[in-house]
Image (tube, rainbow, N blue to C red):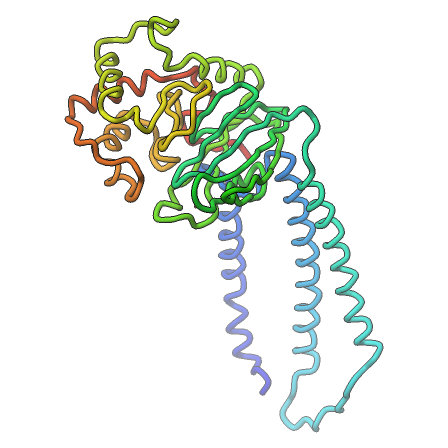
Length: 364
Ligand code: CUA
C-alpha cells in the first residue's frame, strides 16, 4: 500500500522540529563542560589515535548512511504504486549489481580496517622515550599509584608530568577492575596475577576524571580517580612535597598545633594505623589507601566526595553510611575526636596542585 500524499505532508511538518531536537541532543552530548568524562575531547597522544579511528569510521558510516538511505527514499517515491497500476516487471538476480554491492563495502572496510589495525599495534607498543613508570593497582574500591622512580606511593589522584610519556604497569589486589581515563587513553582491564600495560603522554595540564569501567562489586560506580597533569615544575614540587608530608616534627616536619597533635595521637591509637600509612616514601601497600597528601587531595572515597572538612568528618563518623561495603568500619569516634582527626588529616598536605582541588573541566 502506498502512503497517501496528505498524510506525508502532515508528517513532513514535524521534520524541522525533529531536526532541531536531534541537533540540540547532539550538542548537549558533545558538551565537555563540568565533568569531561568524554572520549570526544582527547588530550593525550593515545586518546588522539583512538579518536582518529573513531572519526574516520564515523565519517565513512555517515556517507554510507546518506547514500543508502537517499537511494531508498528516492526509490520509494520514484517507484511508488498508484491506483490502477499493472503488476510491475519481475526481476531476479543481477550479477553486475551483486558484484558492485559486495565490492564497495569490502573497499570501505579496508579503509576502516587498515588504520584500526595500525592503531592496535601502535597502542600496544612499549614506550621507549624515557617514560615515567607508574604501577597502578586496583582495589575494592580505590586506585593505588606507585612511582618506583621516586619510591612514592599515593591513591586516588594520579599526578603526571606533561610532556613525558607515562608507562602504566597495571594489576589488581583483588578482583578484575578496568582503568579508564577517557580523555587520555583507552580502557585497560587489570587482572589478578597479571601485569597489563598502558601508556600516554599529555601536553595539556589539567585534571582528568577516570573511572573503573568493569563491574567489581557493590561500589564499582564509586571507584573513580583523577589524573592530574602538571607541568614538570609543578609535578616536581608535588613529589618533593609528598616526600616530606607526614614526617614527625623531630625529623624535619614543623611542630603541629594542639588540635593537630591530638588528631595525630588519635590516629596512632584508634586503629587507623592498622590500615593506613601517612608517609609516601617507601610505604607498603596496606588495607586502606595511603594518606600522605590527603589534605590536598581533590576527593575522598575514590572520587565520590569532594575533599571538604565536612565530608571527611562524615566519612570518619560512619564510612558504611557514606559508601556501603567498604572495608573501613565504624570506629565509634566522638565528634571531638573527629574534629581533631580532620585537622590532622588536613595537615597532611602537599603544595596545592593547580586545578587539583576542584573537579573542574580540563578545557576543551
Ligand atoms: Cu573496580 Cu569497577
